[in-house]
Length: 142
Image (tube, rainbow, N blue to C red; front, side, top):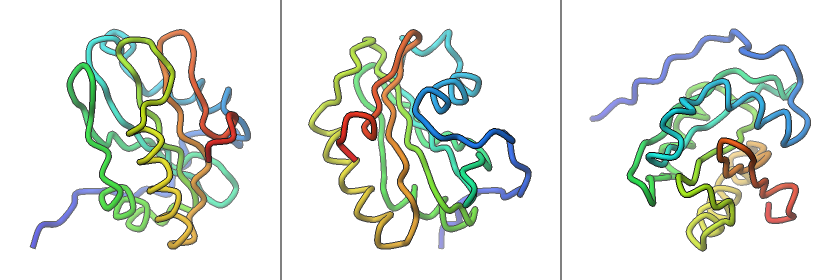
């Protein structure tokens, strides 16, 4: 049987309580290679404790210029193994276009339903570029 390699360290990577999308964008860009942001799509998950302090950032996938895999089962397995209470999903659009695609909207709703079932707070989904971001929570899509 396959086993995921996810390590858990209760060390908080940010003592700052993340309370809005601007703070999330600031945190995640420190964990992103900005030199490759316009080259290929990446997906990361920020894992939070109950106090909304970031436990860590997990690199979920790297794709091509127009897509990357977002597998809800993998995300939930990571959340459960790290004992996270909340998550924020983040991915970039290499084109710089921050408008969510139909797939982005669909996977967000699917992940929201799965998190609700597992009693995990799905706090936001950000689409980012070097200069700006789009927040599903801020836009009422979460």
